Image (cartoon, rainbow, N blue to C red; front, top):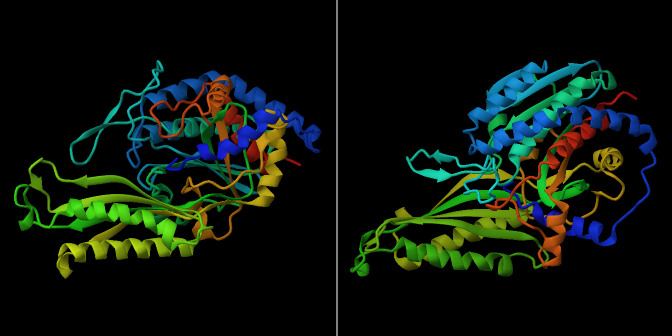
Length: 453
């Protein structure tokens, strides 16, 4: 997840494991138990197939908007189950619709893209894939954020809901979204006329994501869960030349370096001390040779924020700092720094009523005390919610599912580390035990809305 969901689990799981919480079962647990039993049986019968799909997806990661193989698998599986399938929305997005009588419409998302990370897990099904970029260069890629698990869970949800068609009524829409990592995939689907294609509009929407908490634990909490985010590139335009004659140049690398340091004062000196925001420079792209001063330098920035006014203030200060640095370096007016906005998502806010509705069933599924409905919002971000903005107020819930072995998690905590590994890390992996659990979580969340009364 372009998002650092691991932070959420720090509070969530520490509380659970430390206290060994054993809260009483929810009031409606007895009513839901027969349906949960059916979900368990359906997914357990399908678990071996799902694990095979997951391993295959893990071995064949694809970056955002290049998920051709992954989307083809999703489309094939959904068609075989009887879903009406539309492909190539937002380039590689897939939408599958199953109408099953009167009732509400539920949309459930899985993102498909991987990360530019060299895998170091040593798993027998580890990715060894390299992907060629548009400029001809090759990079290592892996599923370091669990999107391969998300796709597998979605296919498990689709199979389970097909098996249990007599137990629910309404319309289920499952969709695989491209390019969550750059934060542009959901918007790309919307811009490709997602809501003008005749799909039933959602009454409720769900998403699920891996987190490096222990397998069998779930985070499902109402309210603001994740920060808003922006991806932007800043280009400093200088005058290139020989490294031995800097006086004949305007060095864009020096300007970029001065800007990087100045950006760090925005949060500490320009925003309210009680506000939460982040300015990160994730990459510096400039030059090639040791003795050549280039004519431009590019900074790749990422912002995180909860308040729109803080976002605007941060962007304004970035522009002011860039211009100030350039003027001080002697850059002419027609070559001032430029800012390119590449992706944006607003804060993710779970619907309180929907979370309250699904959590008792989730607790019946995984056990008392293993569903956390209280923890602070995190600076990680998602674009899941961007798909529904155009429709107005669609209630949604975004669920975090633990994927790390419990013993590994406990060993890390004993060593003073909050998690054994993190998302986007070369060592990130999804315990295979989490594959059927995630599929069950997806199914139970959907049935909380769609199940026959």
